[in-house]
Amino acid sequence: MHEKKLEDLFLETLKDIYFAERQIVKALPRLARGARSEKLKAAFQKHLEETETHVERLQQVFDSIGKRAQTKTCEAIQGILAEGEEIMETFKGAPALDAGLISSAQAVEHYEITRYGTLAAWARQLGYKDAVKLLEATLKEESAADQALTQLAEDALNAAAEKQAA
Image 1: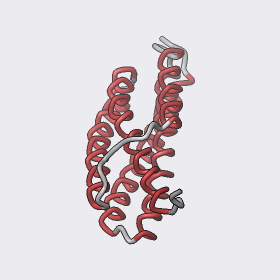
Image 2 (image 1 turned 60 degrees about the vertical axis):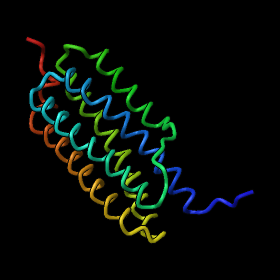
Image 3 (image 1 turned 135 degrees about the vertical axis):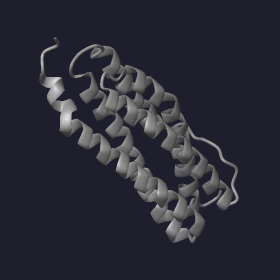
C-alpha cells in the first residue's frame, strides 16, 4: 500500500479546487442574472472572467507538476452553491436578495482563499516554484474579489436590503 504524503494531499486538493472553479464558472452567470443591482451584476461578470483565468492557471499548475488536469467532486462547493441557489429562490424580487447573493459569493471566496493559501504553502514545501507563483496570483485575486464584495455590501446593498420594496 502506498504511504500517503504531502504530494498526494496536494494533488487531491488541487483536483478539488479545479472541480470547484469549474462549478463556479457555471454558477456566476446565474448569480449575475439573479442580482438586482447593476453593480453586483457587473462584479459577478468581472469575477466570471477572473474565474475562467483561474481554471486556466490550475491547468498550468497540473502541467508544472507533470500531472494530467482532473477533478475530484468537491462537496463543500456544491453545498455553498446550493445555498446560493436557495437564497435566489427564497428572496427573488426582495430588497434583501443582493445582500444574500453577496453573502453566498463571499462564502465561495472564503472557501477558495483557504484552498489557495493551503495549496501555495504546500507547493512551496514541495519545491513547486511555478505552482507557487500561479497559486499565489489566484489567491491575490480571490482576496481582492472578497474585498470588492465587502465594499459593495457596505456601500449600498446592505442598507438597500433593509428598505421596504417600493
